[in-house]
Length: 354
Image 1 (cartoon, one colour):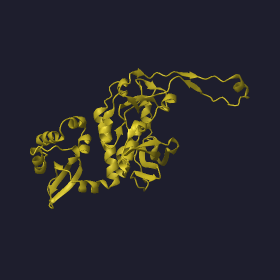
Image 2: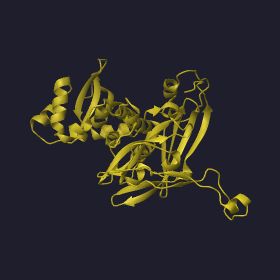
Image 3: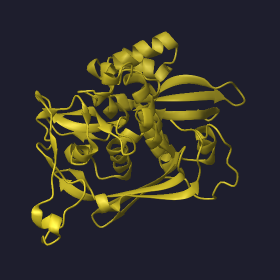
Image 4: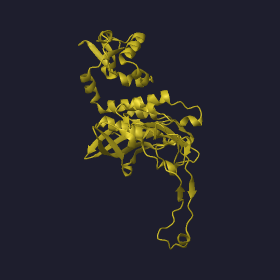
């Protein structure tokens, strides 16, 4: 194999997700049968893989990788190989490539599975397809990931799709009522111990997992709906923390309606990504910074920092911290809301108004 040049090498699981294929179908049947069918049709199976399949050995998805290889100076050709975990681990040591692959895989999964034709399509009771691109995350037993329409923070009639967790058997509609609170006589006279807060409301119902959401949720209510991280288990490693960060913030990567598009974020891994993200006006003098996402741990706190681009804000440094809570052999992360920050590194406004 010394004369073979690897132009691309990634886990087969990741390759299938990036191609928009139904990974769940592959996992329902024997993986070796799936690989054999895929390889036979596309002519991708290497002799080693064919031999293993013919021996009728049961294989896991992680036993295979997708690669593009060539002989010295030859044309790169795709193939499916038995995974060389040493090579795979060496390549995964590049944090940029690892974090970027999860992000790109997530976008591909959204494009393949989240089809919007009407306003009601934004609501989805079962959005478990998102976990296909986030393989280190495990949802608590009896729970399902859903998506609902959250009123955005700019214009009342606009919304973005946001994640929430509900029970498998949830069958009650989440229909809270908001009632304005009027100032008391003492508050009107200015002698009350607790001054009146303009815009104060009473909320009749707060969300819990026995409810399904099938309508637009007012921003004053949605801020009380827990992040998915409260019901997610994961291994104690940086790649898993990054995946959870992506899931908790999936609303910024999902399709949006009307003015909700102002909240779109594109994670940046290189200056080339900025060039791709900019739609209307060129940018000169990009900041000379490291665009690699950073995952750092101090005590029981993990902090995730990355760079994103928004058409109406510019280049922004995005930071969030979680507390690591042990859970048997895995962990859970609890978001520290006050840790969330968005620092503009370079201002930009495309000039287009939605």
